[in-house]
Length: 321
Image (cartoon, rainbow, N blue to C red; front, side, top):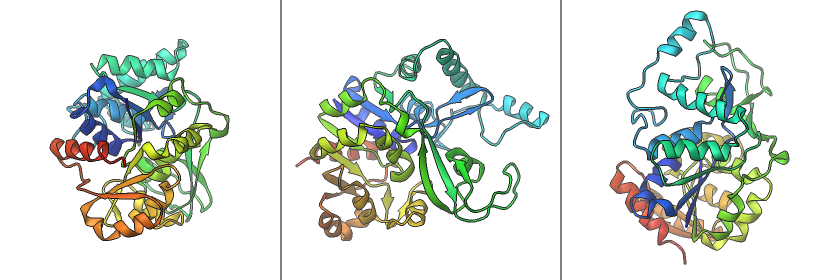
């Protein structure tokens, strides 16, 4: 079994590559739920849905989130009423959240509901939310955030949810801290620790280390379980030539005191992963990565086509020493 520790878009593309080279029923992903939110009375799990929609071939290719050929009539009505519309939910996407919320209210846990959703999309890949308990990524603003449409002004030091930072404020406000609310009181979902203990290879997807991978490791027992399998863990850097391909990973690393480079990624991952795969653009930094105690593999890591995703998957699966 090949296990991937997953955030959203980057992890979804990594998994799509793995699906081309590994039997689908041999793939498992433990997925971040720190980005989850409750809105309009619905339980929304953005990373689980992004991975599901991507693997099902239904993702919006222009945004990397949401469904292709989506319509937005419900959102238009919310705007007409003056309701909360900054977090865009398409009409078809709403059906996913309505189903998840209903099943949770009936007593199913998030693992069961996720399995039901993936089966409905015809997927054999196993997606496991890292916890069924409430876990929320919170960020502290480093500067005042002035009033802007749809986002009230806040003072430096204010703490907001990840989605308020990422979507409502377009991740454009400097951050001074990240906290995983509720993490100490969570338990790993059924199957999480067993998957880590028995996986042939564990892939740290090219997701944001600080707000996609770190929430997984904050769930009690998960970090220790991954450390115990360190020699089988292969990480793919989400930073290429000092920048994130998508999202604020580079800026968050800098703002929170980490070097926004493959070397900075190595310092974050050296305790939990034996190998780091970096892009050809960072070949000159390979020795510095290895000086941090990680084996470094240089390969094309930008998954711009399905073929490149598959080739990266082959590199990752062949990376263990």
